[in-house]
Length: 155
Length: 155
Picture 1 (cartoon, chains in turn purple, blue):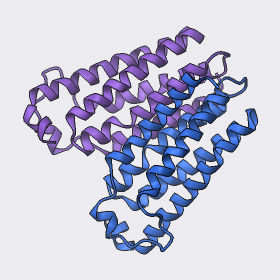
Picture 2 (picture 1 turned 120 degrees about the horizontal axis):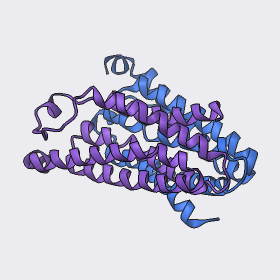
Picture 3 (picture 1 turned 120 degrees about the vertical axis):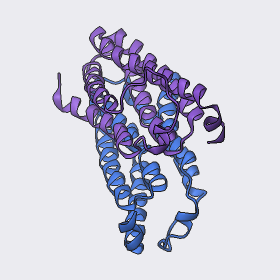
């Protein structure tokens, strides 16, 4: 693997991930009703860091292969949407719009995984834990919406 | 040009651009001292829409060409940073951090332009107006910082 290429893709991940550091879950999030299976706060940055490594590796592996144009376009789409959820959910406190964003992200990650798989199955497999995690995040967003209907409407 | 590929890249641009619609310049921005050459508010979305078209076209042109791996990695890097400035500046009202973000964006756009140019000069040229606009945006951010030192420190 071309490590310089990996670093540019990893930089894109960190750029998107920076929103997670800037828009932290505060008092508002703590006071929301959450499902019993909500992961503790520290799990999120740790998981994302590992996933960012997988995503960058997948990008660097696929980018050098012929026929990877859709994998690259979907890689760009998913990273653009990846950084959007945190400002919408924690910044604007918009629970329903957050669910729309995370659903779009899920579709983009799914598209990227399929396109990556077609050029390099390892690159595709590196996106599988990411898709699983976005599924969990979307479920959590949906559960928070369901458990806090007044907050979701009012925001 | 593969129009479906164009649309996926354009979708990534719209994802990043959505932050501009969600984090609008409000009372806080209006009350800041700004340089005389500050463009009126309506210029920003119009310009971005045109630039997004150019960026997506550049991505779709280069993605199908051999040796475009760095162009693709930098394209992803710049779009991840593109959506970051608005939440930082208008959302968090952090003028100095906004300047750091827009400076990183400038470097990423410059890197993308150089890498695109190496595989397809038209794709590289399509990034030139974008680099010019980010230069103007960075200059505006720097001028706002200089003209409002207390706000920049306090935020």
